[in-house]
Image (cartoon, rainbow, N blue to C red; front, side, top):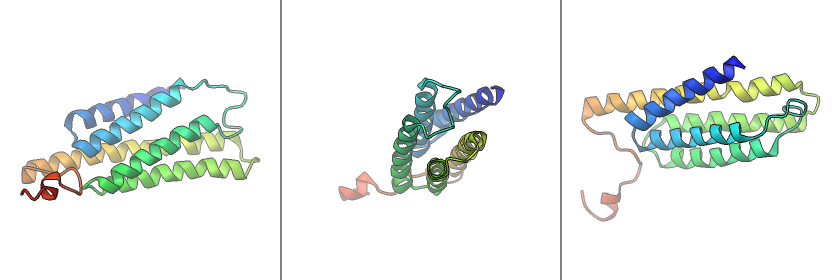
Length: 155
């Protein structure tokens, strides 16, 4: 149970760091990750059935998170959101493995599902750090791959 508290503290710190010091892609990723964690915590944990079958509510949260991360990855002027979305897609694939192999030991499903989140949080932290370094070096760091000013003909 301690590892859950450690993860929640780690994620809370990184998300606060992203909200305070990150650009818009970092902020959106932090909001998406934190929202998915809160939604997962709100779900009732049933030790008898948990990780023995696919919890469709958790799968729905993961799919909504994936769609948000996909939008950030496509629109952001950064490379790390692509890796973040790819890691989460791997997490969704773990649900598929559970669904296709009912003989999968529940603790393996639980470990695989839980441990993929650590590198995702690490990527967000590195993304914020690199954003801060680009701001310090160049004085600006465009958030999105499109520009509203260019669309209107302004530069």
